[in-house]
Length: 361
Image 1 (cartoon, helix red, strand yellow):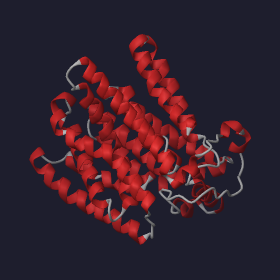
Image 2 (image 1 turned 90 degrees about the vertical axis):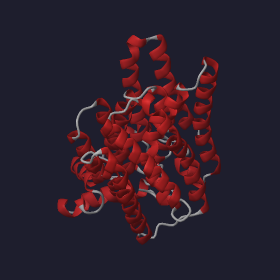
Image 3 (image 1 turned 120 degrees about the vertical axis):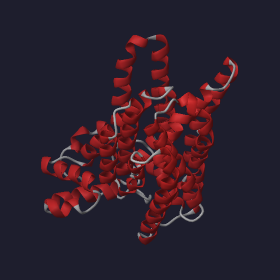
Image 4 (image 1 turned 135 degrees about the horizontal axis):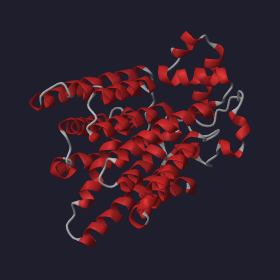
């Protein structure tokens, strides 16, 4: 667990550099990006998805390109096909995915009111747990955050829409984000109706797909999903009161509204499909990163504000600690192992390793 708790040192370093050595912030950001990319991308023989992704790479070796692309999500399989042709192992594919995740994550953090605190909020679930269990999906989340960063920068609609479509090519569940693109074409007064119709239809469709795949839900999955939904719902409740402080443009506000709606849908799905709710929850983490630091900044009084900041930071760290204590899947992430310990394993084909059973994605 200590290796994962050490990740909180990265946003702490970023915060200290912004305050004491502002001229060094760019260098610190590059260090944070490199550290996160290597930590996430070079994990070796660990994580609940390891055997599944090893198998996908093996199929990229064995099948013709057209067939291999149909094995799983096409963008992820394209990376596997390239890795197979170059004689690289699973770690090379994971490293590219990690780079996409971290690039989107840090680009999004930089557009928020408190970048280090936003990164702190992302660590417990997105970086420490999801990135070691669902490589394809966290890559989709990284592309989602890249799209949101462009919206916050006022870069137009074309590139954000392209990134959201690319996210779907990395993990099919990112299709639930596509209504964000449709929202941009409607006047504000009609967006609520589209949110309700498309959001409900998308969630129902994803739930049916999950059920048809025979995904097994258990009490541990229910408890984990419920724990993760608490900060998401807090962000939903706080969002309307913080609109002026957040200073969002129309497009960014529409995207935030959709993520709030998705958070509510995850809550409704939780009793029946906790695994589906927990996985769709990953796409709502950017809303927490946006809203919760802004809520802390709105607390009146310096000492109360500092207490609120400390409480938010402690609650995020506690979420990670509790997950490692109570989740039966924590064994899939411990001990942390890296290709840096045996870099020669990055080259050539590896033997199959069924580490542990964990619902991968």
